[in-house]
Length: 338
Image 1 (cartoon, helix red, strand yellow):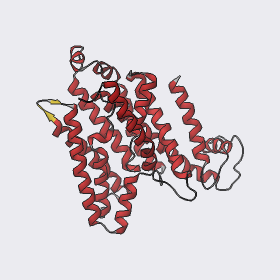
Image 2 (cartoon, rainbow, N blue to C red):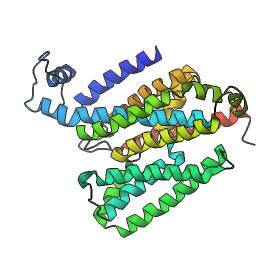
Image 3 (cartoon, rainbow, N blue to C red):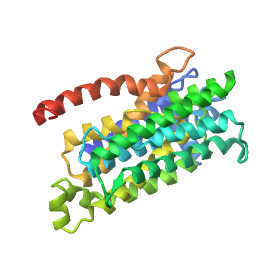
């Protein structure tokens, strides 16, 4: 019922998002325009001569990108929280977002064009994966990865990446700085089908592989020692989880910039509703993340007339207070941090 309800909400939001904008299109025409694009001439004809072109070249790719990115970030967050048994964990802990920002900024500042318009995207993806691997290797000791060590290492690597990003902004000209700031704030503006066709397979692969970890993650929630007695290789499980988190997050942020708190808020809310079982938590988080980011993007581009708010700002405006509440709730239920 939870997943069905989320899917209904996703369809309704997708239609509303596709209908909203400077060119307002009735929802019935959105549905008929979608069917006409698939070769089915059904429903009302377009009332504006550019309605179908707007839907298929601008609105539908943006909606699809929001769905894919939201699902990827949310599943990455659920993996982080499950693998390390911490409801405060999120994908940025492993430094993938900060590393991707440095990679994209390097391509912008130094004018790298080896892969054409895809250069900054590729640099962001590769840098995000490398940063994730660095965080894991630096936090590993005596063949094990402690949760606290990983978090502290992630904080240190994020700080170094922040310094590198500031230095790149110092080196760049005014245009480069504006591009870097825009990338840091996050946006789905300019999403195209070719972008979706790159991100979607990576996100789908990551989500499907994550689903295979549902049972080991459930056993790990009993504690490391009981999980080992039940046949779970805890260290290998965490390695695979970190790799999948890096893949999902790097694929997402490479095209839309840094979008915070989706990987923290959505999995935790789903867990509060459905319980800790990952067999339901992971797919529900994927759909819930798609709903969350689609709603945030709708607010970002319609809240102010003839202007678009940064997507990362919208998600942070909701996620920040939620994180504050979660800190106090966790501390109260755990009896304090000490």
